[in-house]
Amino acid sequence: MDVNLIFKIAAIGIVIAVLNNVLIRSGREEMAMMTTLTGIVVFLMMVISLISRLFDTVRTMFQL
Amino acid sequence: MDIMQIVALGIITAILSTILKEYRPEFALKLSIVAGLVIFISLLGRFNQILEVLKGYAVKANIDILYFSTILKVIGIAYITEFGAQICRDAGEGSIASKIEFAGKVLIMAIAVPIYAALFDIILKIMP
Image 1 (tube, chains in turn blue, green):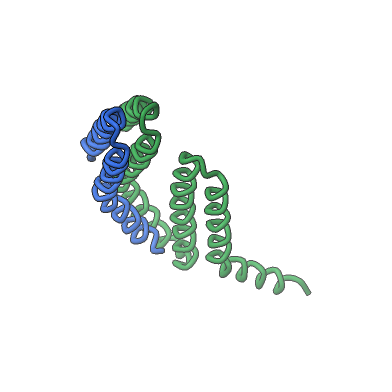
Image 2: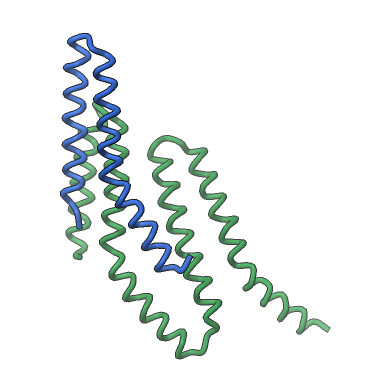
């Protein structure tokens, strides 16, 4: 049970929202874009193992 | 794991998601994906126990293992399809969601063909 993962992702989202706002205010639109992209990549790294675990367990459990 | 924990997890995720939705709607979507994954993975152990019991009774009752595994496969496909379609619908892509559901229906029909075939064989045998 990884409740921590949910908190981590919410925290990443909030931090990236703040960073995005600050960077846009200071006129660095491309940096803001890059931070958003980085956030998405970090999220995918965290979650992709979870998704593959789900698919694997469903596949073995239901003999698909 | 307890039902209380799952409900609490859902409520916390909903609160965080509404906070995030204002600023970053895509992260709210990711949060809901992760909540679904965590809840399902935490339920897998219980589900496995139920399946073991059901399998034991199926073997005892001399049911053809083909039928039992077909039913299991149908349940698995239905669950995975529902999961993917629900995520797409949360992301606002209703058309992709309905296509995923359509694919799930077709695959379930394809898997259930042996059962149809057995049923039709019986019907043809009964009919003169």
